[in-house]
Image (cartoon, rainbow, N blue to C red; front, side, top):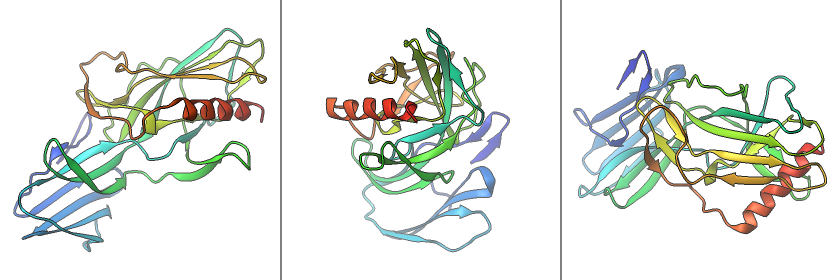
Length: 252
């Protein structure tokens, strides 16, 4: 547990207790605190100055506790802070920083059960799509800088590469977009966390948009390894629903 000049170091994997106590600090003076009491583990995540525990777990001694990273459990609606438009025939290649979710898991290396999840940063909820057929999602503002090659080495965010291509004859005013993070794989580099790339092709207001989630890791200048698989498997029905919401989103 330490802060470095390359962000916050988080010891992912099996939790190593020191005198039956584990503490991991995060941004904004937040802390994850775990205390072992024989077969009981008490947990707290929140302001560092608080000393009370909010959860208790009764466990056996045959297995171990693990700290794993995860993406949020719902899609995330992304809104640029300023008006952003993509001209016909042009593409935007960017990274969206999605706040990290901590998973406290119990079991063996091959089989684990998630006991609790802790969002490192709070995300407000939003509604995406039509009033009758839309869905609940998280809301996040992102600068969506063009071809951003400077990755912020912040372990409390996951770098999600996104490519948006306008293949219509119309100006694409990107007021908001949805990023379906439960379908993404999570990778770890030396200092940063990444997901695989999402490609969105816009073909006009009268046609559905094509969404492709690449199965391979993103192209970055460091070796990556898989940390966790997607929360949800992609099927054709979910993709058709995603196309519809992307299409109606740009119709205003």
